Length: 362
Image (cartoon, rainbow, N blue to C red; front, side, top):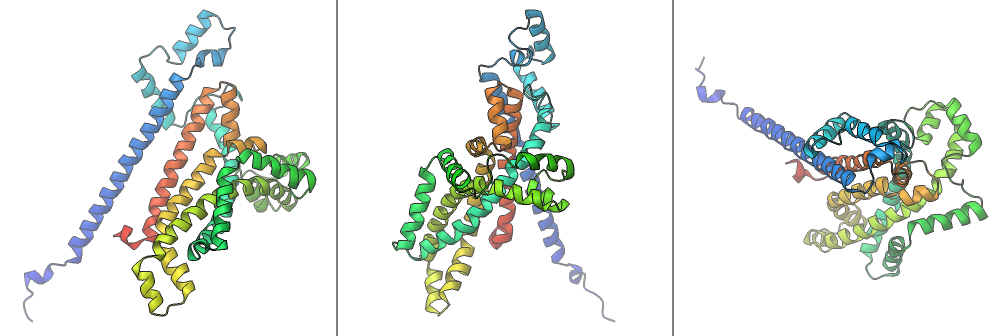
């Protein structure tokens, strides 16, 4: 039996695996540091805003009739007499533990209020984003394949109208026409009054999203009623999202359709639908993921006017009511929640890049 050469035992995949594992650990560590710095910056901004606004947190809690002794005791208990750096350290400690204080408007912990109202906003924004994606991407692709045609002009006009019309006016007109005159949809709120009692009594709160909870419980009467209420506000927000997504899709596709690989594919006789909907669209998916993620985040935090018009009990309406009531604990807690939404969605979009673009995986 021949002797084995020592060099034959050198397995090259081993060092490669070690290098890849080291690169993965390094990437995860870099991501963790970036997230930590971003969240710390978010907390610093909200802390500064809470100290700059001309609202005394002590008077907001005790009321204007509080005596000087009561105000001083409350200030001491809230740590407002400490140096700013120490106040910020306490603020970060509490925020990491999801302790945003107690709302003076509801007399409940802010985190409980956010957990109660955020599913309504999440449900509304998700349906609106689905609406915007399903209509916006095909519209943008069609407009890019026929630049200057009537289809292109129509898509651009619809997008321009979506940007130009105030969203609160569009919501009011939608209520006037489709609810007040035609009766095709439900009115303000998430449910009719009669169904709200049934929902509270018969439907377990699994997710907080009415459509999901009622479907899981088999309460189809409540499901249908909730669907009639969410269609109009979701369509209003979805129209705004569709205008943005279609415009960006058109821009991305126009750039890709002018590339040499598209010309080569056409010269080789590849079907036009495959050139456009497979090759060109696949190459715009990476920037398009960012567009969709930002649109989704904007709907989650920017639906204040829509929630106000439709009396939708979501995060936007909660922050608005808290601001009008000088409830700074609720305002700052809601602001942190919105910031975390942006951070999480940006992280998810980065992860999706690796599935869509092989170059990102390498």
